Amino acid sequence: MNDYKFKNKLWALIPCFVLLIWFTFDMTGLYINDKPLVEQAFSDDWMFFFAYLAAILLFIFIDKIGKYILDIWLLMWFITQFFSHWFFTITGEGLKKNEYFKDTVKLISSETRYIPDLYHIILHILILIAFTFLTIFIAKGFKKKKNKEIKNA
Image (cartoon, rainbow, N blue to C red):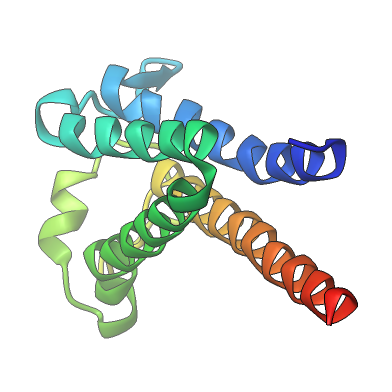
């Protein structure tokens, strides 16, 4: 792999690793001053965690297919998170979710509307950042390949 591609791939991987570290807190639980940022959810989310880890490893070791699998995974993950969290915020539904996340650290508390807690807000932002950086990496690859084809024509 040439130096240019390695640097671009590294820029695509860094946000994926940051997201992996953040998602690890969902596996272990994380508390701030005895208040949960996120409760341990290994029994519920372990398959998602290992699927994400596998997608990252595919991208690292089998770049040609791995980058697409990881990009699709990130997009599907964000869509799932959107409908699991933000849809309820937008529609005003989901007061039961307020009860489920009642003890977690919040940026904005509401008794009348579900608003995702701090952990999930950061998770969603990190998913979008990782997806964006990886999509840019893929798009640069297409552009470079097209430029190479034009030069060879």
